Length: 112
Image (cartoon, rainbow, N blue to C red):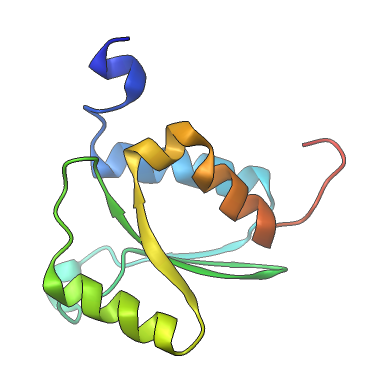
């Protein structure tokens, strides 16, 4: 398979767009994205998804993107509090992980 088919050349913005399409499909109405990271705390996660059945806090990265120590610190602190915080990469889109995790917090529909 080509890199394009596997998504390995997908940008973080393209990954975010695909994730948003999935989110809407599961009727997760609340999603927050920091658009000006230069005005936020260093390392603060990219996305918060609040669905009927839970909250996901995710840092988005390409398959080759590097997670910074500050990003790891934020994720670790959210996890310490019992929150579901992690990193999603392009490979997670194609493996079905992102779909599964969004489905788990979204409205469960017999049609999806």
